[in-house]
Image (cartoon, rainbow, N blue to C red; front, side):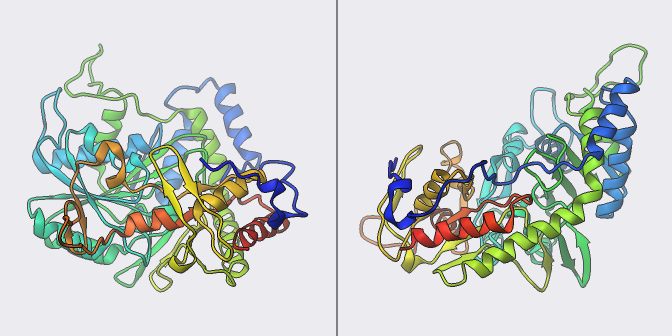
Length: 438
C-alpha cells in the first residue's frame, strides 16, 4: 500500500484537512423522522407491524407508480425474495432444503454490489455475469444478446442501476422479452430515478417483473436500514409478505408449509423512512447539483464524470463518480487487499486520488469491483460483447481483452457526494483532485 505523505507533498502546499470528516454519502435527517419514531414508541408499536409500515408502503407505491409495496428489513432481503419468487414462477416450488434456482443459470449485472448477485447463490443458482457498457456503466445490451446466444436456456436476468443511473432498460427488456426471460430489477441505488420507456417516463422500481429498492444508511432516502419489494401483482406481494414473516400459516398455532424468513421491516425503521420520504425530491436536486459542479470544476482535467443517457433517463445522482482518461493514467496495480501506484507529473490514478482525499479527511471509494473479478465468483461464466469472456487468450494468440467493467474499475472512483457538502467543501475536493495531476 502506498504510504505517501500528502500533507507534506509540495503539490498540496497551503491546503489543510477538513476539520470534520467529509462523507461519501451520509444520512440527512430533517426532524420529522423523530416524530414518527417517537409515536411508534409511545404507542408501543415497536414490532414488525404498525402505522409507519403501512404508510411507507402506501407512499412508496404511490411515488413509483406501482400497486403494491412490501416493506422489508433491507434491500438485500427484498432482492432475495424477488429472486426466490422469480425462480419459483419459472421452475416451480422446491423442497425445503433446495433453492428455487437449483441447476439453473441467471444473467446478472457485473459492476454492482454483491447484494445484487448473492441471492442467486442463496437460491442455488449460478450467476452468469454480463459485461458493462461505457454509455451508462450498466449492463450492456450487446453483451446480453451474446449471452443468450451462449446460454439460450436462461430465463432470468438481474439488472442493477449503478449509482442511481438507469440502464438502457428498453433495449434490455426487449431482449429479455424476445427470449421469454423475467427481470429482477435492482433499483436499490436509484430510488427517484426515471427512465423513458416506450415514450413514457416511469420510475425505476417498476421496470422489471420483480423490483427492489433500498433504504440503507447511505442511500438517497434512508431508514438506517430497510428495503422494499415493489410489484403490480397482489399475488406476488402476498407471497413476499408471507415469506418475510417466517411463512406462518393461518392456524391457531405456529404452522409452516414453506420455508420463511425474518425479513419484515420494523415499525421504528419505517418511522425514519416515513419522515424522509417527503424530502426525496429535495435530495435528488442537491445530488444533481453536486454532480454538475463536479462536471464543471473538473472539465479542464483529462477525466469524465459517470455518464447517463440524457435523452431517456433522469438519474437521482446518488453518487458522483469520475473516470480518468487512458492517456492520463499513472501506473497503478492492485492486489486482493493492497495496491501500489506511482506519481507522474500531469497524470494520476484512482488510488492516488483516493489516498489524497483520505489524507485531507474526505471519504471516497473505488468503483464497485466487478463481480466476475471477485474471488468467490472467479469460476462463474462472464460474457462480453464478443461472447465468452473467460479463457480467450493463449501464449501464441493475443486476444482483444474486451472487459469494460474491469476498465471502469481500473480508471474510476466515487467522489464525496454528501448532499450536506457545502460549495466551499466541494471546491476543495476539486482542488485536491487538480493537484493530483500536477
